Image (tube, rainbow over all chains, first blue to last red; front, top):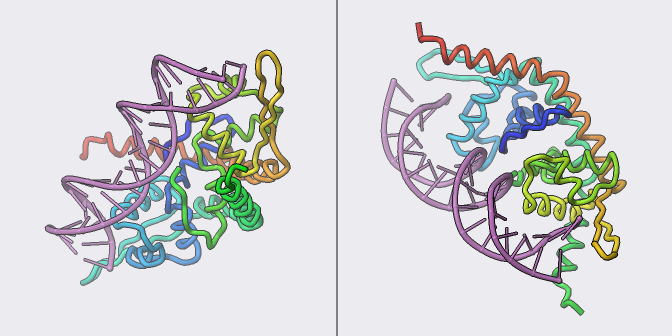
Length: 122
Length: 122
DNA sequence: CAGTATCCAATTTGATACTG
DNA sequence: CAGTATCAAATTGGATACTG
């Protein structure tokens, strides 16, 4: 998502941290448990390796998640949530709750519009 | 913003409603008081007429705001928040609060990264 | 005043092949 | 396994001129 610039309300900062298409899901998953790269790829159906890497790096930069490498014959990497990431996850959950409570309302609205559009302009 | 599809957590619904670059600001402004088109254009410096119109229409479709036309010699239109829009604004405020509280943390992180990058790889 | 219509630029996301 | 590199597609946002 394009960076927002209006910082009067602080929402921009939050959305810049979480705006990527997959970031809330990543945050959610690593908050449940530390996840490996391949694991996240499976958990987020449709994400490409490039984008997953990108968003993980950004979230690492933002101190939302932590990357730990376990050396070995086959390399292993784990991503886990940071304390800071937890605080964001909590805040995000409020919006998620709103979404859950009102997605019916939203869906109905969309349908109403659809019906209105398909009405034969009588 | 691109539509999210993961609806397990409800965040997608919320972000689809508020994802546009200006929507939170629009919601915020019309929540403070009913606003006219030109007024919003002034209040949201940098928004183009096209985009403002687009986002207003989408938010109207989503039942977040209401459009009222006052006929007259010079036409006048007012956008006001709906009850539903208020509930979203409240939810968004939680994230805004997070942003406000932690933007210092975020900024520091970004600076740390900048410093790291500009360090002459010694 | 309150938009619409076009055209264009920027950014984000994705598909795929390849590497340590 | 955990990525990187490259190229292309899709969306969004923006500038500007014009209209009822």
